[in-house]
Image (cartoon, rainbow, N blue to C red; front, side, top):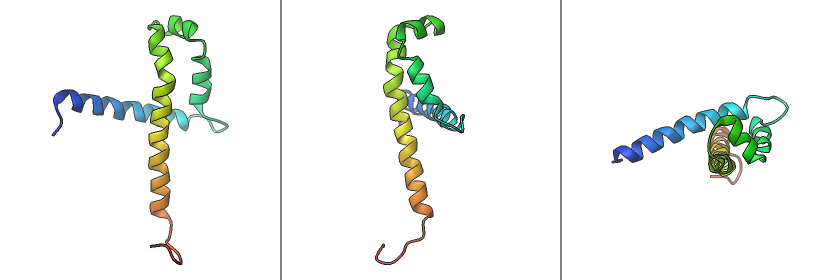
Length: 90
């Protein structure tokens, strides 16, 4: 059973995953997040633009990368689940 805090954090992460998934599908010629993270390379400017502390901007790259990895893992498993097993595969 989750505590209220754990439940809220899990719910917040699910919302963040939804945003990352939409960003990954936003552009047909590339990944929105790659462009966004390149903008975050100027952490001071991005922090001023978004009116957030610089530390929040610098933490974005790791968090977005982790969430993209989670989505990639889920997509890979979904693809494997749809494949027809052949030959020696069990």
